[in-house]
Structure formats: C-alpha cells, structure tokens
Length: 518
Image (cartoon, rainbow, N blue to C red; front, side, top):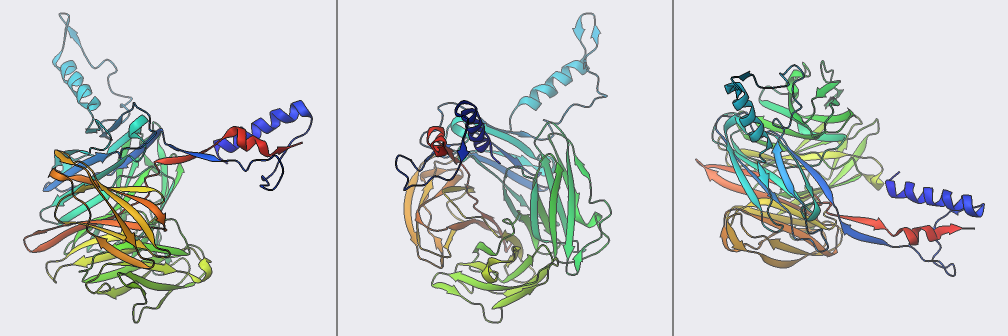
C-alpha cells in the first residue's frame, strides 16, 4: 500500500469521526455531482543510482558518464552527484577516532594524511552542472571504483548514468558497458555461467547506512543448484561486494539463471560475464517474470544468438518465439516454440537469427499464463576474433529513456514496437565538451524493429546522450549498441533502455476524497 493511499484512508477516518459514517468506494463517473478524480504528472524530486565496479583488469580504461534531460516543471535547484562506494564506506569502529597525535601543538604527519584522505573522500567522481549537458570522467586499471549517487531537485527527473570499459587483452577483453541502476530487493539473471571457460561475478552494491543481507540462488538445466555460501551474504553499508559465481557451487554448468533476493536492506545488482575466448560484457537484470517478453536490438550482423530462459515454479510452458524484423513479425524456422520445464534453465541456439537485418525477439507464453525471464548472448565477428554481449528481456519505455556515452560513429539505436505502431522523438544532447542539441521524430511500424539513424549534435565534441520519448502508440522498446574494431576484433556492447521513471502521478487529494460517500 503506498503512502498516498494511507493518507487518503487517514482522511476518510477523520471524516468518519465527524460525520459518524464514511465509506471509501470506487468513483462512479455517472453519479451526479461526482468527479472521477485526476492525477497530476510531476517530475520526481529525488532519485538514486548505483554503478558496479567496472573491472579487475589492470588494462581496463573506464569512462563514467552522467546526464539529466531538461524537464519542464522541474525544481530550479538541486544536485546530482556520484561518489566512490569505497570512499563512502562506514568508518572502521577500531580506527582511531581522533586520527591525529599532537606534538608541540602541531598536527602529526598521520593527521595530515588523514585530513587529505577525508578531503579526497568528499570529492565526487561526477557532478552535473546543468540539465541537458552530460559530464564524464575517466579511470584506468583495476582501481576504478563502484559508484553510489543521488540526484534531487532539477537533476532528479530522468537522471541517468553509464559506465563503459575497454579491456585491451586477457579474459573479458573487449568493450563492456552497463547503465547504472536503482537499488531493489529482487533480481533475475538468466544467461550466467559457472563453467570453467567463464568467470562470472555478481556485483552487489549497497547504497544505505546499514548492512544488506542477500541470498543468491542458482538454477541450472536440472533445477536449483546446491550452493555452499549463497545464503546470508552480508554487504556492508555504502560498499560494493563482487561474488564469483563458481565459488558458490561445485556444479559446472554452461547456462545458469541467478536469482538475487534481498532479505534486509536493498542493493544494486549486475552480472559481469567474462569469457576466455569471446571477451565479455555486463548482463543486466531481466525484466520481471512475465508471460510476454521483448529482447530489443539484436545486432544485424550477429553470428550467433543463444537464448537462455527460465520459468519460476513448477509449471512447464511452450514459449512462442517471433522475431520483430524491419518488415514485421516472423517466426524463425525450426524454433517456432521452445519448451521450458518449470524451475529449470533452458538454452537454445538460434544461429544467425537476424540475417543482416535489425531484429528483436518477442517471446509469448500461451495466454500469458506462465511467467518467464530470458536473455540472449550475442556473438559478432569471425571465429577466433569474436566478441560477446548480452541482451536481457527489457521493460518498455513508458515516457522517456536515455542512453549515454554515444559517439558520432559506432552508435546504433534500435527501436521496436511489437504490437501497435508508435511515434517517438529522439534528442541528441550537447556533447561533454561542446555541441548543439538536435532532435528528430520517427514513426515505428507495428510489429517491426528499426535501426534508426539517430541525430548527432552539431559541432559535437566528446560523447553525448540520446533521449527517446514516446509521443503516441506503443509500447516501445529500445536498445543502444556501441561498437568499434580493435586488432580485427569487433568490440561491442548493448544496453536496453529502461524508462527513466522521471515522472510520477500525484493524485489530487481534494478529488480523491470526493469518493467518500455518506
């Protein structure tokens, strides 16, 4: 029950004390003298984001980016700050509270160092100066930190952050990208692995001042895997904890579904999947279990597409598979339906599914009766020089979503409208170092996926943001691919665009209370 509902019930109770009787009932539009009640849509006033630790490689080069779109009606003041999670960790109880020794009335060298350390801890990694213009920062090697951040006032509505990492060599070499996410209490990750060829970590980030307690469940091809230390994992206040999945179980399986359940507190979570031969990328959480899923933006030159799906509970399901291509919805030959057994992870090789065209997978359970989570692993490039990325089932863009760290070349924005047609507006922001915003509108035909030619800021310098807004129709799903070529290997990373949740419906109390009847 949300806070607004509680306040309205409290109002009804107070009215009952005065009149002797009150009842809360659904409003009747036909009733004389009654209003249906209306909700004003207003910008959110505060939000938080968490970014996992980018890499353990000394060869990693990471770019952090932060951005808030210009939002009509937003507060005129505010801040948006990302700081290192390690710098924000609670102080050790055994640490000397004074942090200094006095000698001849002067602070000792230890005190000077502690003061300098405290000053550095207070310094943000990224801080926005104005809406509509992204800012970025760079970090090299394995010391790049996980980030914890908050935004309020004019920076809160639509605040988005992204980290993009290039690893030149070794396990997981390639381009790795992930959008920073909000804290939550439950996550699903189909597509992880405990196989010897993979090094998969689940990164847990706690933004709060109290410890979080987390359970990690693993599901393989025969059901839940026996884990040794997967229960009751403690994540310290304002800190990040990477957990190597292969240390949780003795079973080696190629395809595993990870279920993260937070017993107390809340965390941000993402899986970093690193492969010895095909590079690696981040696997974001799948959309909540549903009888209808959309996996947007499979690259048109994908050499191999592997679908991993899981249905919680005991019910089996025959999942209908369709590809939303530029010409409409088609059924892949030989993969019309896929059978999932309840509680067991299933994987299906779909080959060169897109065959040179933009495409998105649309998965449907009969009558939507059995909930499913899913993700695909995509390979690009020729054998021996391949790179991998992951696309989980995504949530629709209800109002607005943003992708960061775009470049004039190597950026692909893929949009699909699996049901009805839609019109969208895409805005390219100013660049991090200069440039003038540009905007275009596009029509997406029903049942199709289109790789659109996104606008680029005039006079672009640095990276820029692409903001997608729905104008009509839908639902709309989208993803952004960043790509480059290094040593003949096609580096790439794909991020679905979740709705930025920058607007919230606020019921008008006077209208809502009109449903009270005497």
